[in-house]
Structures are given as C-alpha cells and as structure tokens.
View 1 (cartoon, rainbow, N blue to C red):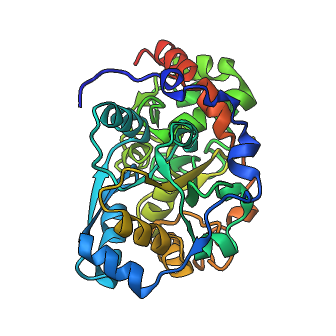
View 2 (cartoon, one colour):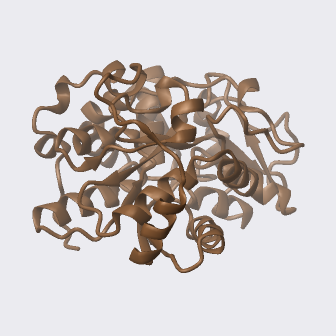
Length: 356
C-alpha cells in the first residue's frame, strides 16, 4: 500500500450525524437481522469456501493461536490473518474499497470509531450470532447488527521492577509521569499507528487536556508505534516506565516471570473496545459468518481472555484466577464518536508536540 494519508473526514460522508448512543447503546432495532446459530448447514457452506481472511491489529501470536483454534474445530477452513496497527488498517481498507479490491472477510479494530464510517458507507454486512443476541449488553453491540465487541482491554502505566526498586517509587498517576525524575526513562506508543493509543490519547486529552501532553513531550519519551511495543521495551529494560500501552501484555509478561508491574492510574485507566464485523463484500461470506459466530461464543471468549489477559463482555466468561477483575479498576469512559471527530486533530497536534 502507498503512503497516501486518508482523512476520516473524507471517508465519513456525513456519518457525523450518527451519535454515539445511536451507534453503540441503542436497543436492537425492529429491522435488525434475526440471530443466527451455528448450524450444520452453516458449517458445510463455510467448509466449501475453505478460507476466512481476518484483518486485525491483535498481536500476531494471539491472532495465530485464535486462528489455529478455529481451524482445529472446523477442519478444512484456513484462517488467514493480515495484521497491522488499526490506524494503518483503516487506511488500507479505504484504499482497497476505492480500488474495488475486496480481500477481507472479517475486520477487528482497536479503534471502535472506525465502525462509524464503515457502517455509514454500507461496507458492513448485518449479522447477529446467537450468543451476541442472548448475552451481549446493548452498549457492546450495534443496534442494526453490523458489529459486536469481541474484546476489551486497557492502556495502563507500568514499570520495570528491576529499574524501579519499589512500588512507592513508581508512578501512581498520569500526573506523576511529569516528574523530572522520569525524563528520558519512559516509552509510549503512537496514535497515528495504533488504535489503542489513538483511543487512549483521546481519553487523556478529554480528562487532562492538551497541556498534559505538552508537558509530557518535554520528558524525552521514547516513541514506538504499536501499543504492544512499550511492554516489550519495558521488559527488556530499555526504559523504566511505560507511559501508555497494552495492560494485557504487561500482565502476560509478569506471569511469564518478567520484571514488570502494571499501574492503574489514579485518574482512571483508558479503556478500549475491539469490535468485529463482516464486510458486505466478503469473498468467503459463510466462513466469515461462522468465524464471527464462533468468536463470540462463551467458549471462545473464555479461551481468548484466558490466553490474552483481555476482558470479555460475555457475562458467562470468568476472570482467570489470580488476575485482577476489570470491575475492580477505575476506568475512563469510552467515546468512539468523540474519537472519530478528534482523530485528525490528535494526529496533527501529537506529531507537532512530540516531533514524530
């Protein structure tokens, strides 16, 4: 793909009129599609197509394990995963539609605001699985059946326990990151690449203002792309503190014995939803429906959360023993419509402040 930048304003085509409540928090509409169960007929139709193509920002090892689990359950269907940062995927998808290229069946994003223009442009196919219809709260499913939230995760602070000797010395809030003692010792992701960091940046701007980022930019912060990169830099000891990044990667690294510790900031922890949808132009539509239905079953959601340390909105999914429950964490509120409106401003102002 070329380096041409795609403006959400250009793609949106009037979708600013879609308020957040109308997109995410309304009850299912009368014209919404009926729920679909995983039937023998759907499985056989999917096996004839033999493949499903998923575009997703999730870590490749995570996506690959998820794909292998699906392939093991439905032998004969291959899962092909195209992985990139959500903001890059957003540009790629617009470019493909503009060129009449339709390679993707299913899309997952770490920036829920992407689904606003995709829905408005008529690019998504209505599909509601049985589990989504029965169990998913209205705020985590589209009222017209165009997408459903597959996972929730957090963007936290964290520190290297070998470089920061005690919890008392570690930062406990975003405000603490402005302390001169952390200058040159922090790492963070980039909102122009990562949907997680885009959503995080929006929530922090809303709660703390651009003045916070102006001050943070003077702290000589190491800038990386993906939200998966800061935890890795932290574990390697390249930086002592993570200013933002995936909390779940920190949890998994800690469980693997790495010297890292997550911190849930006093101001609240930014929260990210990852919806999934089927494209109306999916080349393997039945395999796409089967994958979407399978992804949102209790069994898959439990497997996914156990393996990735992310969170599920399926009420039958239980937290893995020893892990912190999301209900025990002070969270910042999500606002995908707000992210959509501010995305270009965030990219521009962030790049100017951090000179990246």
